[in-house]
Amino acid sequence: MTGAFLFLCRGEDSESRVGKEDVTVAWGQTIGRALVLVCLGESMARAQEAVVPARATIDGADTAWVLVSSALVLAMIVPGLALFYGGLVRSKNVLGTIMHSLVILCLVSLLWVLAGYSLAFGPDTGGMIGGLDWVGLEGVGTAPHATYGPTIPHQAFMVFQLMFAAVTPALITGAFAERMKFGALMLFAGLWSLWVYAPIAHWLWGGGWLAGLGALDFAGGAVVHLSSGVSALVCALVLGTRHGYGTDYMAPHNLPMTLLGTGLLWFGWFGFNAGSALGANEVAVVAVVATHTAAVSGALMWLAVEWIHRGTPTVLGVASGAVAGLATVTPAAGYIGPFSALVIGLMAGGLSYAAIISKGKFGYDDSLDVVGIHGVGGVVGLLAVGFFASKAVNSSGADGLFFGSAGLLGAQALTVAAVGLFSAGMTFVILKVVDRTVGLRVTAEEESMGLDLSQHNERAYS
Image (cartoon, rainbow, N blue to C red; front, side):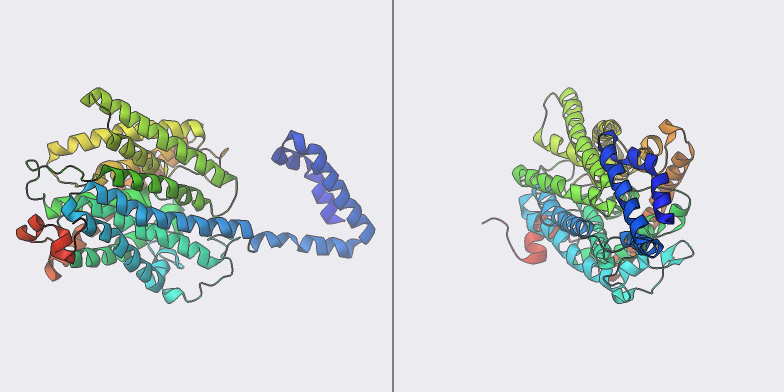
């Protein structure tokens, strides 16, 4: 009878969850369960209570959503990011640029299975890195993991996170587009995924020190966007400008291709953000609404600012604003309401535009504006969590400054500083290692010829 008594005592809580319109149904179910327990006795009551842990077993809907989300993030990389970046470069470099996303997906996927997943999510070692217990996915099976999705197979969580690990170094390639050797790219991407991405992912998502301090990063503001944006800046500075930068005509060669990539990125981002809820649940719905709201407000804000500043709204501007909104809302998507997402999108469109306009003053050649969109977006989004996060939206999160707590903002600021400094320092080291081993840049002749011919002996267009 104990189970029935406790269930009846929780009637008020049940009412609050299901809503007033379902009170009658909820109480009817409660009374029915109580009568069953009375009739069948205490032994049946114990059997009924024993069913409760089934919540920790695999849920088909949750598993399906995470697997679909994994496919959506894959579509973000290939063909989404590949086409987005491919359309932005000159025609002689389009295949080489698309190849960057494709080969990084293949390379990082293999490294993730061999060691990356264990380093990022394996049993914690001093708060800094995961252990080697899961090398080669040893011990990563189809049973749920209590921390990494108690209602989905462990391997489903692993493959979802694999897609994040692959898209992040692919984002960086936009900063050095049209001038890095292909062999250097592969070595850089492999080392960066293990030396930079895996530790940062562990700090925030694998039980590391930043998570222990209460920092929040729902779907990758620090792990994906800040780390790639800061690393992109270091890459642009170390490799130097493209030959003819500032004098030659370097406009995008195929904006329809870029727009197609934008649409695929936007489509996939629903899996990127809402999939991070690790289930088909209320938090996933919150993330979908926040993601779309921030994207459209970012696009419209960029359009308005550009229209005022340049006198003409551009198609590329709207696409860039949408991506800026998507990137900036990523760390907050599962912790905020629609109005907060709208504000974050407006900030993303305006601040990213300002950053890209200002890069000429600093003299660095970030070919495809990775710093202005993903770097700025990562910083703004992480700090926005400290202001806009609400436990009323997601009880597993925390309240930000606007909801009565200042502590979260401090943790978010520390995350920005720590991830930014670590990414910058390690990226510089990796670039020096790559330069000493295979060399970073193509020759001036190869750059003039284009990466398609010089690196792959192929042409995109006849």
